[in-house]
Length: 66
Image (cartoon, rainbow, N blue to C red; front, side, top):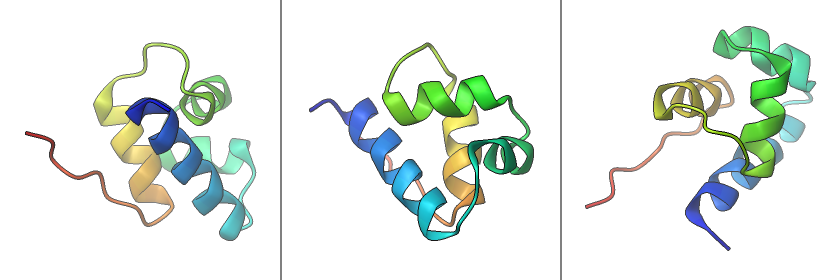
């Protein structure tokens, strides 16, 4: 499993724990529902800033790799 897929799954699980729809998370993160779907499925070419905004909206933080 890739890191992108793991991050997407973590965001999806947190979204569901908070009982948010993809539409609600998109609004909180300032992005589109399609982008949230792509993040959760580990597809697309979403910027790290957008992924971080989605993670932040559900109480997650992205660690620094390196």
